[in-house]
Length: 168
Image 1 (spheres, rainbow, N blue to C red):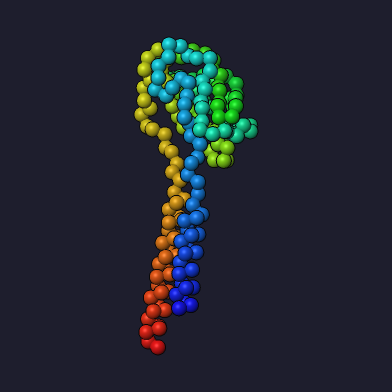
Image 2 (cartoon, rainbow, N blue to C red):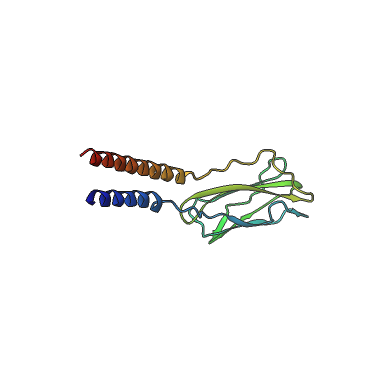
């Protein structure tokens, strides 16, 4: 009976450590932009604004924004300004056609996030031919594997103990 209690305890501990140590999946994300992704404006605005779901790290180099016109010319003026959840990037020059905003920020939890959006000046924006690659957090798969191995080991131990107790 003591052996069964020990095995059940080991099972509960293995399962708890596999499931209880799961990482947080709610990383910050871009929630709004001005101009909006896919929108059309009459003239290049003086600045673009990106709003995120949480506060951002404002340390130098943590935020980078590149705004380019259809020919790839840089339209950014100065460094981006981070204020809590909002990043503002001043623009200079003129543009027509598709304008692309490529951004990278570091969320308050220390995770870098990045993306790309487009808007049109004077005409609807053309969608990029190849969508940007985004990373996927597969940490959960590691924890699921550890949990499965732990459960398999516990089942093997139970079977071996049951067989040895029958042969006595």
